[in-house]
Length: 283
Image (cartoon, rainbow, N blue to C red; front, side, top):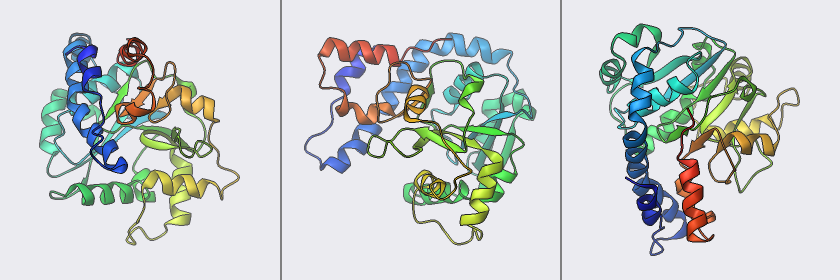
């Protein structure tokens, strides 16, 4: 599928209320985006994957929290591998998708850290609640033997090699266009493991009491009360992880297509050139 075809599909449904348009365009475009990426980059990703094995432990680690046998799983694993083969990998999964993951990993499974964190099937709403509670629980981070982690959701794309300089601060992610002064968040985030344990123990000492907000917003708000904890400035965050704020050459993307309306007002040829650039993996 060409980028031109993707651009033609990138039109929000104006018949929906504004708050529903974002979710609708996200779900509409995601399968086409990953079809394009798989169709375009499978040869290079598969060739690298054939001889790849991550270290069981490393100073920097990827973390996936996913309870479904998600169709993007194989692409994400291979994308992570080629972007940073020196990083370890932790997958928090469920009894519903653990066999699926084992099949994807094959004889590489001994090199992955697989943690069964969920049981049974969950609705979309319940899945979000469980995700938010897992990532604000100190016990989750205590299972990770690494200094820093980079979280990866199933709608992330890594465009370039992950540099070690990305691992700084306590917690941060893609800047929020509506709160750019805060550390941000979203599908891909950088977290200091030791400090996340401290933060979660202090502000959520009893993980049995369920969280009622998104985990990224919860963490971002708590950082404001911790002068010893930090996050990079806006330009650094914007240059490395992109979601709602367009950037020139980001390393990681998270469902940027959801916010297409924010930069679709430019001329058609400029828009096409920008999307072609974003969807070019430089490995």
